[in-house]
Structure formats: structure tokens, C-alpha cells
Length: 203
Image (cartoon, rainbow, N blue to C red):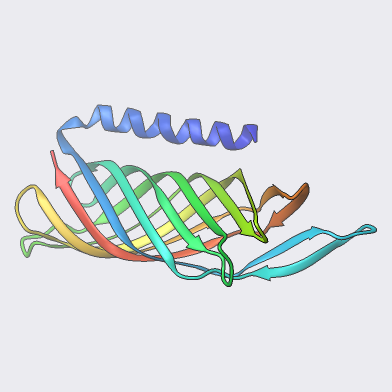
């Protein structure tokens, strides 16, 4: 837990220093779209010892994201990003959520056509939230995990200060543990595939 907290602190500190040192190129980016979560291996303690292992499946959900960043010329940008990823657990009223906080490096190609392709990656942490609603019982718990992502897309400059585009993001988190019905549930790493529309404002 302390390692995750230190990592998040470093991400926030690095991004804050970067943005302050390059205020003239600050931008705000948001994204909205579909989120597909891969099946996750799950284990719970078994009566009499040992554990019971299975697979948790998720229905498609949504992603909301926002990032503030600074550009360093036409090729490079650094961002601080957060958001919320939501997916229902299949065949139930339960769901899982992701609240990431990531520092990103973005490689981009700005040119006279107005079309700006980009690719990048980032790392940080994510707060995973689980709500279980079954058999008249509602419980929830949360846990912090290390997270990393890769992404790519293309934007079109509608004006000097506004661009719209489409993008893909892959987010993965490390193993997490939750206490549900007085039992510890181990969730292996989660993998999220997001497809959405992006909006960018220059300041």
C-alpha cells in the first residue's frame, strides 16, 4: 500500500511541475465511450481450507476520462489523467469500477492538414470499486492497484483551440483483494479496452 501511495505521489508531483513549467501550452482533453473488460480469474476461500477459483465475466460498460497536459513542440506532450470505468458483472446486479490516476507521455504529429495522429502510454495507480447486489444483500469494497495503459488515436482541429477525434485505450491493473460477506476475494489483474470520442481544448 505504501508503495502505491508513493507512486501516486510521484505521478502527481511530476505532472504538476511539468504543467507549471509550461503554462503557455496547457490543454484539457476529455473522452467518452465504450469500455470492454476482459474476464478475470477470481479466487475465494473454501470451507475447510484452500480456495475456490473461477472466472468473473463482465458486460460492456462505459468510460469517462479527463486529462490536463502540456505540449513541448509539435511532437511531445505530458499529461495527468483520471476518469471512471464502469462494467456490470454478467448475469447479476453487481458491478466493478476503476478510478485511475495516471501520468502519460504522448507522441503526436501536428501538421498543416489539421489531422493529428497520436500514440502514448502512462502509469500510476487505480482505485478499484466492487459492489455486490445478490440475494437481497448489498455489499461493496475497494482496493488500490498499480495501473498502466497504452493508447492511440487521431484528432481533427476544428479551430485553433478545439479538436475532436476518436481513440482507443488499454488499461491494466495489478491484483486486488476485496472483503465480501466476510470472505477475502482475490481478483487477478484487470484488462480494459476502451473505444471513444475525444474532445480537446487549448488554453
